[in-house]
Image 1 (cartoon, rainbow, N blue to C red):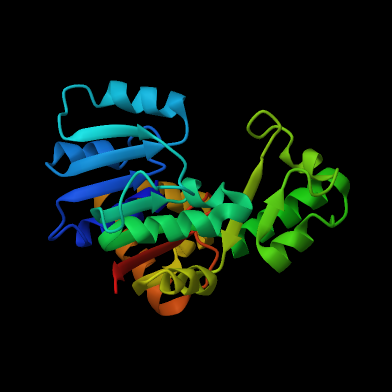
Image 2 (cartoon, rainbow, N blue to C red; image 1 turned 180 degrees about the horizontal axis):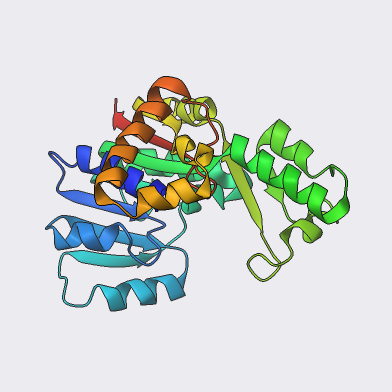
Length: 257
């Protein structure tokens, strides 16, 4: 929840001058539907027909949102600079595996003014996999090496990977790509964007004990103050931190050159 609220705060800062929005990997409409309700013309793209069905049912009666089935690595159905703002909130990049760069390039290409994108955090993912390998085998498994060297996990890399992914998404975790903020920012610049912000997201939440975090979540006042502290911590203290434990641990805001 903290991760999502931090993304919304950054999104709210970047809506001025925006009329058209593409939500790449829009899922069930967490961002696209509220934005459409506010009057923005939104195109919601997702790879999964099931996700699109859920989003359509949630968006009944909203006229200024359209739904498109497509792959984030190939947005050729849209001309370059088609949308004032492009959102790509992690899954449609990270779960492309070794084609993640294509997804980033395509999101940059179709952005006319701004891009807000999130990716999985390399530091956090390494720590998760190191811990998981120790838990399932009692040792540090070689699965972590490709994440260190290339930022990539593939279910088929090593037989041991199946042990780590057991119990997650029907025992299959597919392929994913993770990034440091510097790696992600460098790719955005390569694909024609000027980066305004590229840093880990919500790292401070990892350092609060669970009972204290619950206290923050139970109070609107404390939560608002904490979100502000999270933003300062991410930008001023630990921009290369681990982010929150779930995905979307690196957030970037970029504008077209």
